[in-house]
Length: 166
Image (cartoon, rainbow, N blue to C red; front, side):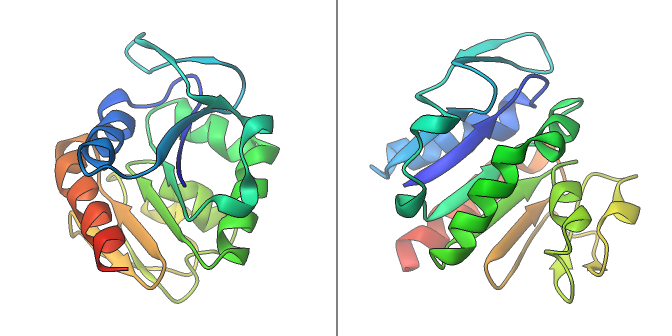
């Protein structure tokens, strides 16, 4: 299962573009409300989530997608469930994907140590231990990062291709 985490303040296009492409490909993707069934995006668009955090079968999650947006990325960073699902995905041998400001979640946890990564301009200092690039989308091992909403389609396409190759 692919889990796309939604918290209040998430960037709508960065979350829903991957969900849309995954579903078009027939992949098992679920939106996960980290703090409730409805998450309200950065542009005040409410989204009814497929699952809430305690309903997620963590042993079945093969990928977690962290959308950016403000204060969405900070809300993800502050959530204990974010740590729980990242740990589960890592244990499952899965993939972690983050776009825009959300790579800060990975940087603050040391997950980007020794990896190439990208993020929204201005957040580079949060990517602790990473070799920061200005590329639109970067995949290094089991981590995929992207710059922002303007590359949401390229980010989603990269993730679909990775899943299809697996």
